[in-house]
Length: 488
Image 1 (cartoon, rainbow, N blue to C red):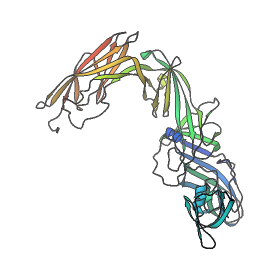
Image 2: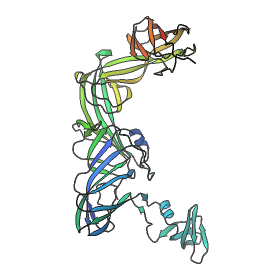
Image 3: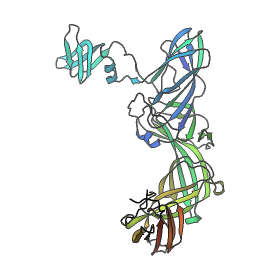
Image 4: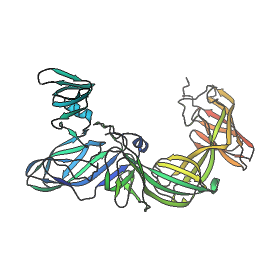
């Protein structure tokens, strides 16, 4: 049976059919890589909300109805079945134990089973009450003897054990005042579905003369354990907080398919609470075990950008809890990479000015891949900075030349030099980013290249490096601290 949320509903006491209204599926961004690489389970990575109308033909009084074709990653606590008429839902049950051999045996303990063995004398059958199942089967025979079967060919059950299903199934106890068809609204949350944006950027020009073309698609993965066919699909760029979930866990092996959507107009983002939503036009189908590429952002051309080279000290953005007066601190010397980067403003004046959902960015120059980078959720009017890779023909070397501390005067000074070598046939400007990590109150008191304060803990130096040559920047930074600052 195909696992589909549009399948005909299963009924144990009555016959039911799926409601004709188009179901809605809302998939939230985040956890994409984890969903691709993991098995579906409740509370696992990925998050989606499903809403649909369903109908049941009820008899007067008590009814038991069931709906199959559900995700194995369904969050049972989120399920809501809301009557549109006068019926009332008295109880709900989610059966997730699939009828595998181990589960059948476990649930048949205490029941009569027939087990077949194959041997040199042919096939033998043994009937008794199942006492244990694991490393073989243990039966209590009708005459009271106990039979241990370490190997067996097959077993037979008189009936399916209670709670065993061939697919995850929801059941409801419904009370109806009169016989007839009644419609309901079904909604639930499920893990195992996620999406991310996938951008391609094509560059032309160098430095601040750079121009870029960009287009974006949505990569949507479904490993929830069920097909979603003919749904109104909405992709939300955002990750609402989710409380830790507990519930049944199942491990299944699924194949992975890659499908390409036909060209279509990209959806326009609309506000969705604190996030942005993209309602895809028409109906979509997300088969279980698939990754699909769907239109997200129309191609935009000629966007102003900046290609730049940057080399950074290894200290990163660490902030000291007190003035670091140890002479060995920040004394590391040696080579450090020069990184090729891309900057652009997400503004209408630059050609963009739209919400850019988080995802992967592939950057090309005349067909050559410059690198890939991950971009977070980027609102309109924000600046984007991407690291693309280590430059082959530019190298940097950093050294600490001097350090002096005056505890009585509550100051210290440090002199740093960075040499950049250029093996390219053309000159290059390398931005030297220096974290000033000894204390938060600092000042660059001298520098062979003008210093620009980047933030509260770092400064940059734009170093021009000739073709086939090298250039050097040397700066001295002075730190101060107040009399009430304690130094261990």
